[in-house]
Image (cartoon, rainbow, N blue to C red):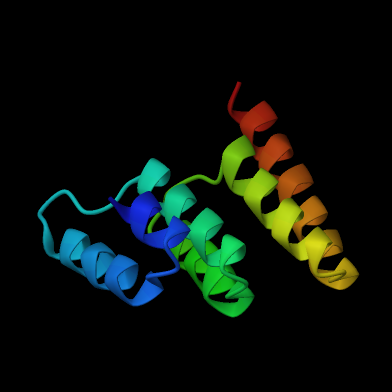
Length: 102
């Protein structure tokens, strides 16, 4: 449903549904955050995309390849090279943390 709202450019409805999901006892997970991040990027709402990425990490949800792919795609399309550099550094940091756990 979130993805449908995002593709239809109805991001207000998408955000409303997401907020309702947060009130659920389980709350949104990694896939939900990835969907929201991608949809905000598709709708050129890059500030919201970035805010959700930070919120995702604060909620102890680990960004994965899909998360980073969405960030790289949308920052790249908008020529935000400094943001791309930050994402690349975050990806490397994430890889190192996973390697340390193994």
